Image 1 (cartoon, rainbow, N blue to C red):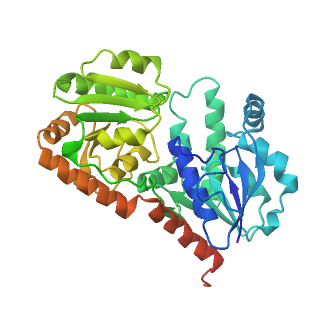
Image 2 (image 1 turned 90 degrees about the vertical axis):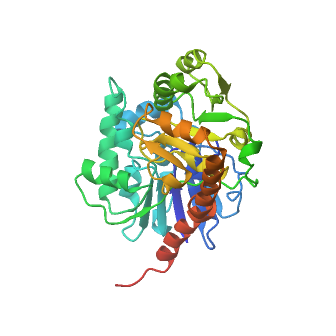
Length: 380
């Protein structure tokens, strides 16, 4: 099977989006007879599963400010269009059985595909919703370009890999269409090869984690500190705020509270998860799924979060609590902290939910099932 793979984000193990790209690309490369051609940014070829001889780099380089400017002028919301146009003369589009697109705004490739070529688009989030936040000034140009390009992909008839039904409903509502070809394709957390530590052996740590230069995470954390943590900061537990590149607002906010510590850009988040008794997830915005939830589950860490933050995850009541807002998290947190036995129960359940639903093996099986259908289509 010949596959053309396009991504505007590097497959890697640092960001949530990068991990999802890596999981998809690795799944494609690990399919028995696949030959995968790559177009996108530079990435680490030594990553497990994609160091194979069946992955061929057609074009890969880092984006430049000039790329972004030209892409905007041409009406595209991603610099990948520039790499694609540089490489298209070297691509035989007729040879591909499948084109796999990461993110739902890569409409430019559709104009070059043969009618028989199968198309799959992995929807990381509803791009129009994601870019609607603080959409002022020149950002309105990108918003318009996303609307035009995402609409084209959604209406194209490609198989859409969508994380959960909320995003499916949003796409159908935004673009006034019924999406018939889709598969629910949630995130995964890679097996770190560890045993889940016992609750009684962990430190009394509550964890908030994520990219701390993200406006979404900044807003959620500061609201949590002001509406929830200020009421319970003397509960006998420490709040650890861990993530890369903390903003100045986050640094100042953390310093105002007792029993609160910032861990900027930790070299190994796994060690922090191993010692945590609880993950808090006070997200107010965002589509897609929060990968840190799957990561917490893989370490047997119970979770108290907002409905928005836990969107897409099943069996939440077995491993934690979901509430409407940060202020509503107080009761769930205190109930959990008051009972070590309850912590043990939710920790065990969290790890079991991860094993059933959010491992890489489950993720890869979904992709391979789709590839089987492409290889052996059922005649009508």
